[in-house]
Length: 420
Ligand code: GLU
Image 1: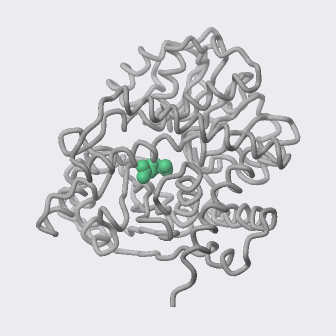
Image 2: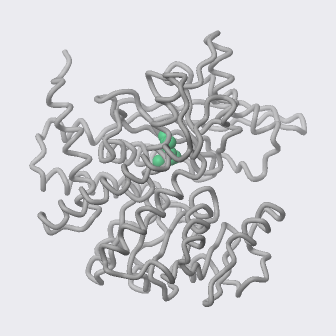
């Protein structure tokens, strides 16, 4: 799933283009528009790390806080060779619109370290995580900015971050990160939340389109925490998951894949690419399969100008952040494809992160059924809000979702006024 060198730059440009277009549509105050085009804070840090062979490596880390108007900022931390200031800035901006759209009391943030974590040992990852956390410690905290998992980070990474923060402040602070292990104040249902949210959205979207849900043909790009959970839940509800892929490639079986078996194989081999369950296909080919629902749940920029025309799915639910470029969006709109944008489709993760944070602050923990019920409610309500606005304004769902998100932040900024 390679991207061209300019892709991150393009991603930020794309995010700004989207904001500009929405600003025009909602007649956004020019001053507020200018403020929203730039992140409030961006921090670049060096992360010197002792490698197992005795060498010292210096990684570059980032944390960007886009908007702090409505509360602390919120957003994931990714470990990936493509991490750059531009990419993280674009993703922080998306987090702002996502939190606002979902009605969460947060602004958006994103962070990451530019590294290939797949080539690092657990001990190296721990040392890098701890040093990165102490380098950004001045800007994070339960009431400042609350990181969470993203690409190639997980519960263990969150546990190390929470420990580093707690040791340095002298107070055990579960609320400083979300997506933690349960024992350390994590929430039931958080690990599955993003994939589960995608599943609720797909269910709502097929209903809206009058398409049968049972038996619907689904292709999922990415078999990480988002794609694998969405595929499992859809498979359990009798959707026909015909293709899945990970970074090494995908497998395809028009009669449907056995997702439970693939999960076991993946846990054993670390990849699904060796599975005998179907034919080998590439990530590119997966996107172009004949199917009802396509879930891009890998990385950004996967559906672009050059392949958008060949996408045959009727519904695209964006599990990843920014998988569709603005040029591709236009092509898909002309074809009548229903694209459910990332800030809505994958918002289940941050929604349950919010539940986790609330539980940590109150030291009072909820049952899993309560969490899933609230998640279902928050996802379906947001889907309906976006759908109604899209109908009234005659725009696509992404534009409607952005209009809702941006307006809410703008309104809050207006109420607070400009300091000093
Ligand atoms: N990284 C996830 C996202 O992009 C979750 C963020 C969070 O839970 O704060 O939405």
